[in-house]
Length: 188
Image (cartoon, rainbow, N blue to C red):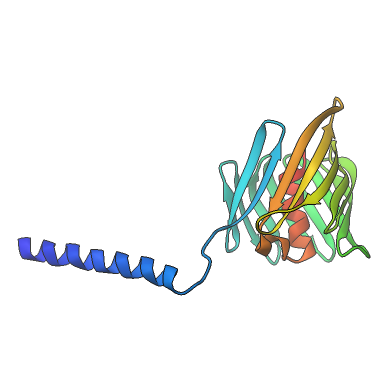
């Protein structure tokens, strides 16, 4: 029995060493994909693992039909319908139409959280209204991916510093999928 345990321990050690060296030795970057939003004193940090988007207060599943799960505002059930995101974020209806723009981005226009919204997302900025908040975020240099920094004003006109960072794979998502994730992360 003792001999069996020694052989088992050695086998586990060999497997763990070979798996860690093979992932490091192949030259691939295994850093997780992420999206992070900092606003005032709060942060929403998410990691993207294939079709799952997870974080301390986010658990979402994305597929060709849409984005579903739990977000910072509650239940998320957004369906992709052509160039439209339709469903619920929290307890309020959401229907955002995407209109491509000449700046290489898109305009999200429609209803978010029961409030008329219009938010423009381009490689240079994120500007406009989403739900009860207005955003004026400008792109700034990031180590990887893309980051936007600026101000948001919500409700009682209190200005808060806001930053959203999208890793390269998230920034390269099709516009409708990227818009859904930005809406979930920024929307209030």
